[in-house]
Length: 305
Image (cartoon, rainbow, N blue to C red; front, top):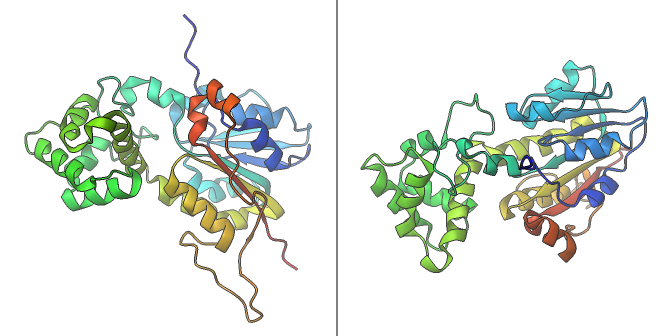
């Protein structure tokens, strides 16, 4: 039996095109994972080009290519600027971030990302991070969980799901993925139970790994790390993270608040490369079903005059 695939990048040709690669450029793959994007980038770099690959997951280290043009950094991309400066790099040509979860995380049952197998309720991308999903569920009250599921799970009745979990917690039954699935089931719509269950697990994963905070930090810091005209290329898989990216590229902030200068010109660090998000076609979705929810947005750093 062949080894399971670590990850299949969505929209790979379109992503590479948006990066506007130069043979001698310096690039960052903020979500290295299985290294699919990184290998495609390295194929297009010359001997003077360089690529930094960031990943907080220890498992990703095994995928790092043995290439003098590549540097692996085991860290969350929210700390990218400090690590680049540590390596003597102030500005790069483009930054890529493929958000979400690798196939590997779902396939490795012990990581606790999926309800398809019973495992400790972990969900940490960084195995050294202090907070597991089980610990988070011990601390959140009904209001916290309702807000979490409303924002990141898109449940029709987030309060019902939250109350079901709290009821189970009072009986001490929230230490494994199967226990969580059983606990929240009464709070889900039976007709869409599987989908809603996946959304509950997704919301907890986002919270455990502070994914939206990390994304906001990256986009806030990116103008300080890119060369003039340098590009940020972001793949999202959830409406909230896509909204954050869209807002930054349109207004320069996560809230989408438009600010104008004295002359009425919008103040923004970005110039959109993709006027609307790029999505997968039917052929790619058939090959890689995960690509169905992928949205690719790209923007260039506005050249300061």
